[in-house]
Length: 358
Image (cartoon, rainbow, N blue to C red; front, side, top):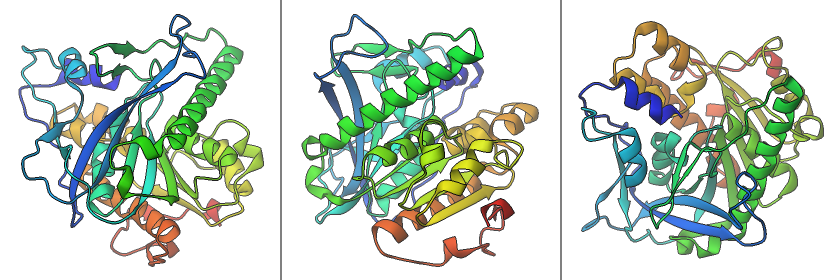
């Protein structure tokens, strides 16, 4: 969906992602998982649910390995035809590089509704460079494009609701499918690339938009996830009333106040573990994705920039998000308390702790 928008507006330019800040080099590898216990929930003709995941991890060495492209070749051919005049980003992860020694905390990532697993690569690869193994999940037929190893590309195939009731039912199904996808991935972590580098006693999850709602909903039903984080996503499903008793962070734009997104205030009241509500001044919904920097690079008109990724500088926004996401997981998966989450910081005046968070 959003990658298609890029294809329409991009001028002749090389797009880039911000350099990771961690001390470790980053490896990456993809895996194709097949859940034979269920058919695809969106396409009845597909007998089994197939998923693509990508693992990002600290690498022992990257010598002899190539940097991974931002999206797979088949997807790139769709969104970036030869005559487009632009080049999609190359990531800072090296394909198939050997993992660094030791066992590292594991983070699962779920993207927004209609978006691919690559949408927050700048944040994901930075976490890997700081010693996390991050598993990003594609949700086929929900995402715009998912390419499988044999070259098949699953396109978005979500029905269009025609009433508010149908829309609510659709979102409930989207969430349920994503939670089931995520729990299946959790059950297969030992089979993934770089599994030897994973500490499966320390698992967290984060996501953007519907992916953030997925993190919360999965935590509610699966105690393997010890800490969760929602990047600017409205909550949905039973977690709003049931709450959570483990650490959870809500990081968003200023659109989640009392009168703008009641799901944040309602869920906040039910969080019984360590809880954090942070807002990033000058941000908008897509600020919490790679589009925060890419839309600036392609020179979108100022009004479109502010509407989609806000008025904040793109690189600054990414740097702030990296710092706070890492601080949260460092505190609750690594036992490094730090001070960044204790209140406003002069290093990051753009981050506020709303009064509603109390």
